[in-house]
Length: 189
Figure: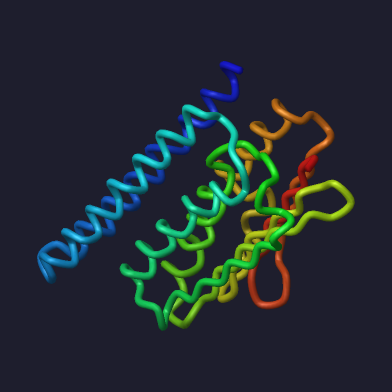
């Protein structure tokens, strides 16, 4: 359990600093918008702390964290530049999963593609329940990252968290697809 807690804590500063950078990039241009973003961040942080304390929650609860984050990122990049799709099958929503599992992969999709690609990028989160297993995917279009075959620090952290919790019952795959990158995670449902 202490290993899981240490791994979860490694994600928080990375996430927080990126959101604070978003707000600082807006605050001199539009004070009202910066205030709104700060309120959204405060809500997101409260939800994140609650999720961290719980350690586990439903997919529906996890998506309730991902949506505000994506809203904040769309505010930064614009809805034309960052398009968001969340597609979760109804049957998958009550499935229990480790808290804060999807935030880092979603953030990385934005950091490595939207921030570095001049054109529009779509970030898609998909969830389904198949044969008693929760299947999650985070996809992004725009840029393929062949130089990151292992996915870097965030993906290593994700793999360690899942291995500590589920052993070999969980799987993680990461790599190029079509015109972007895809992270696929499968957990016992």
